[in-house]
Amino acid sequence: MRSAADVDLFQSRLADDAAATEATLAALLADAAVAGEIVRPPRLVAAMRHAVLGGGKRLRPFLMIETARLFGVENAGVLRAAAGLELLHCYSLVHDDLPAMDDDDLRRGQPTVHKAFDEATAILAGDALLTLAFDATAAESHDDPAVRAELAVKLARAAGLGGMCGGQMLDLAAEATKSPLSHADIARLQAMKTGALILYAVEAGAILGGASQPARAGLTVYGRAIGEAFQIADDILDAEGDEAALGKRAGKDADRNKATFVSAMGMAGARARLADLVREAETALDALGPQTPTGVLRAAARFIAERKS
Image (cartoon, rainbow, N blue to C red; front, side, top):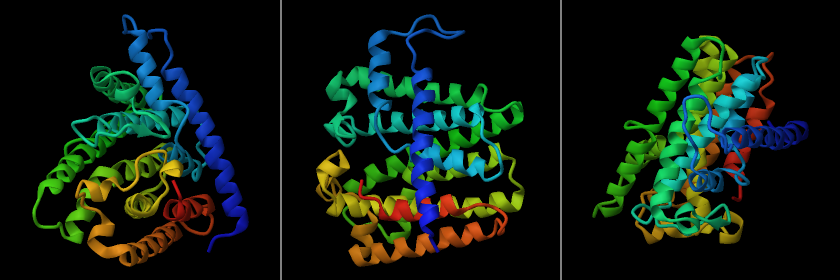
């Protein structure tokens, strides 16, 4: 059960973690070239900053930071890994907004990168954000090179062929199909497209925090549950949300015949599944034991399910 103190602490931590992530992102997107680079083209840097800075709740970095904090680990390395995840997430949004994909004009209440700049610059900005994400993850995120390597491999698999990119491919195929996808098919698609990076955020936080294997197992269940909950909430918002609050076009899923939890289960079914997932996430945290301060992550599960944007 949520307490008012947990909710207040969650809101405070979400804001603080977002600010710390923003500062780390700004440093990573500086004008000056770093060792091994030759020069950073100003227009490309500007497009990358447009895609990344000054917007978003930074939920994925928050989940990584707060999971590591469960085990007493708070340092610049965690922030760097969290910023790396956000860079990768932002790359995916830049490419997702392109005319060949979702063809969106707005993102976080401002013109998408291909609108603010041009399509070629947007493609290169996404490519550069993706590679910078692995730079941030593989360099200085942890003292132990084996930990850095584990993070890089997990991030690659969450983002790539069998994760986010593969899920996007399945999503594109679903738009053209004549027979609707089953709930199981949609759940798999969304676990790849959306859930994989959210799960990675939680698992990476556990790795950085030095969590035991039983704790990591419980957090994996938690991460999967909130990943699915995030997508169901997103589907509900697309169907019912206000475009001004969302900061992007609403109703696009139905317009493009997208496979969503709402289309498969109906609004009532989607809301019921969302409530079940929150309970599943909270139960998974029980496995960490009463000595582990899980209140912030419990409040996060509720926030993900109840968010309005």
